[in-house]
Figure 1: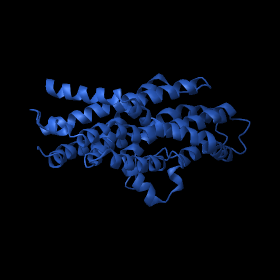
Figure 2: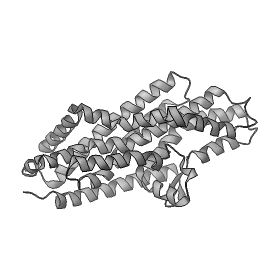
Figure 3: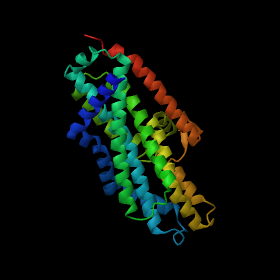
Figure 4: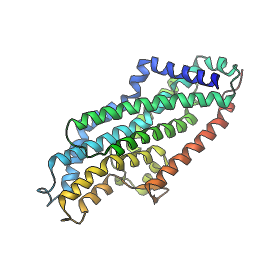
Length: 303
């Protein structure tokens, strides 16, 4: 156990000492933020205004603005839960490219201990980075108005960050262990950064896509965690808006917003509860961990 902890600590220190890697881990989140400010915010506001026709005097403009800002935060965190864990796994590729994995494989550690040390270190790194992004988001938005998020929901949101970091790290471990060079890994990261915002519905709500594309996107655990997070931080504000409306629209405004921005969990085309979504992510995580333990010895043969 001491050797395992030592290797895990070594992997953690290597990642956090590489300032460029830490910065690039957050780059996609920054890109999503810039895109939102330049192009997407007005689109979301127009969508909300279209849904609230006839209710203008009942809904506070500040609440609509906060609603859109929270949707942004969901998009930023959802993207980060995909790109940050992948970047945290760069130590594996660097070790292989620099032949350091030869030395590691020559140690008394078993193969499953080696791969799990990479996994644990990357998960911790991803959780810390994503928690920092989330905390900054909460601080910035709370300065702009009331988010109507309970302390329990805030605590649960950090638990979801940990779940998302776990599942994404496990999934990308199965991909990144096949890369032999950092250039190949970086090329894949570029494609991943461009696609992840669409997969989780950060740029365009998944409701705008065909059922086939929605089912494909919902297969990935990151999309499910984003749905869980969206419900966690937005339901309080939506309940407040619904109370302000006072039943005039029979709840149509809130229902239309939830329909437009994908508040429902879906797996293989079937709607599932939030609890069912958590179990799906956990099952996906377990399968990935078992697979990485089995695949790693085949890829990294002792020299």
